[in-house]
Length: 416
Image 1 (tube, rainbow, N blue to C red):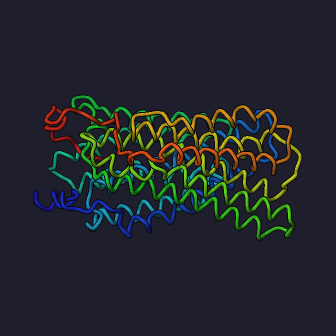
Image 2 (tube, helix red, strand yellow):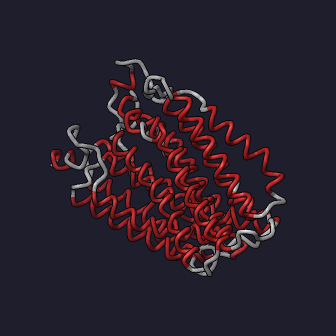
Image 3 (cartoon, rainbow, N blue to C red):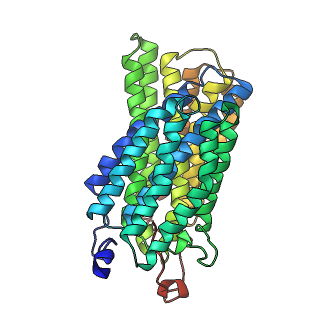
C-alpha cells in the first residue's frame, strides 16, 4: 500500500515535460481567458469610478481562475500525471474551470453561485481527494492544510454569491485575500505548522513548461482577438493598418518574453538549490505577465474597431497600460533568472510613461503605433546588448543556497 502511495509522486527519472492531459486541461482556460478579455472589453465606454470598479471586479475573477490553474500546475509538477487518480483530479478541475469560464461574463451578477460552487469544488474537495489517495503518507498533510484554509474562506465566497449584489465584490475580495495569503504562508495550522512553498521539491522543468504554455495561451488569445475583430468589421485601409500593428505588437511581446529570460526559465529552475522558491516567485511574475497580455489584447480590439476614435481614459488603460505592465513583469523576470535589472526594458517603460500624457490627446491608432515602436526599441536594445558577448547563463539569486545546506538535506512536503 505504501508503494502504491509513493507511485503518485513524480519519479526522479521523469522527463518533467507537460503531458497531453495538461494541454487538454488548458483548453478550459483558453475559454476562461477569452471571457476575462470579454469582460475587460466591456469597459471601453466607462469612465471614472465605474471604470475602476469594473476593472477591479474583472481582475478579481481573473485572480480566482489563476489560483485554480496555478495550483493544478503545482500538483502535476509533483505528482505523476499518468496515475488514474491524478488524471481524474485534473479532468475534474478542467470541468470546474469550464463552469467558471461559462459563468464568468455574468459572475458578478446572476451567475455568481455557479462560479462560486465550481471554485469551492476545486479548492475544498480536490485537496481532500488527493489527501485520501495519499493516506498514511507524510505529504498528505499539505492538501489537508489547503482544504482547511479553503473551508475557512468558503463562507465569504458563499455569502458573496447568495447575499446582496452590492456586497459581492467586497466579500469575494476578502475571501480571495485569505486564499492567496494562506498559500503565501504555507497554510499554517495549529500543531501542524506551515508547509512553506519555497521548500517544496518540484519538477522545475515541468513548472517552467507550464508557465511558458500559459503565456502562449494568453498570447494566442490576443491573436484570436485581432483576427475576430478584423474579420467582423467592414474592411478599410485604416483597420488593415491597425490589424497589422496589433499583430506586430503581439509578435514583439513574444520576442521580448523569450529573449532570453523566458527561454532560460527551465534551466534556472533546474539549477536552483530550492526550486520551490524560484517557482513561487516566477508564478507571481507570470500572473502579471498573463494579465498584461490580456489587457493589451483589449486595446487591439478598441483600435481595430475605431482606429481614429476619440481619445478616452479607458482605451489608454488598455493600449498603453497593458504593455507597461508587461515590461514591469519582464524586468522582474530578468532579475529572477539573471539577478540583474534589464536596462532596455526600463528604458521602454520610462518612454511609455513619458509619452502617455501626449497619447491621451491622440487617436487610438497613434497610441498603438507608439507602443509598437517602443517595444521594437526594447527588442533591438536587448539584441544589441548581447551582440558580441558570451551567451548569458542563469544566475538567479532566488532559491540559491549553499550545497549541503539544511534545506538541501531536509525531506520537505510536496504540494497538494
